[in-house]
Image (cartoon, rainbow, N blue to C red):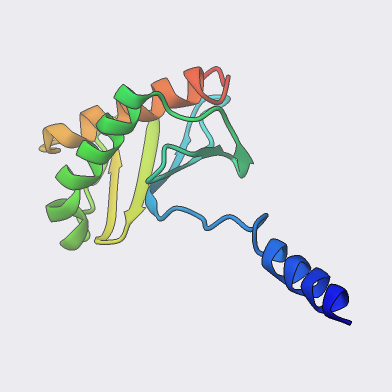
Length: 136
C-alpha cells in the first residue's frame, strides 16, 4: 500500500513538470500592404520567442531581444495615447502594433511619426527575414 501511495505521489509530482508557463508578450505587429508578401503577423514575447503568422520561429538573438524590449519601452507613450497616423500618398506598408499599453497605427510613410516607429518597421523586417525566413 505504501509503495502504491509513493508511486501515486510521484506521478502527481511529475504531471506538472512538462507544463511550461508562457512568457508575457512584448508586442504584436500586424503588417499589411500593397505588395505581395506584405501581410505579416509578428508576435514577440519577453523571453525572445517569435511567432510569424501564427507559427513559432527561431528565437530572437540576445541583441534582438534587447532591441525588442527597448522598442516596447519607447512605444509606451504612443501606445497609451492610441496614436493613429494617416498615410501619405504612395504608402506601401501599414502597421498596427498592440502591446500592454495600447495600440499604434501608422504607415511606412506617415508624416510626423516618432523615430521609434521607423526602428520598429526595421525590426519587423529583420525579424521576419532572419527569424522567420520570410522574404519581406
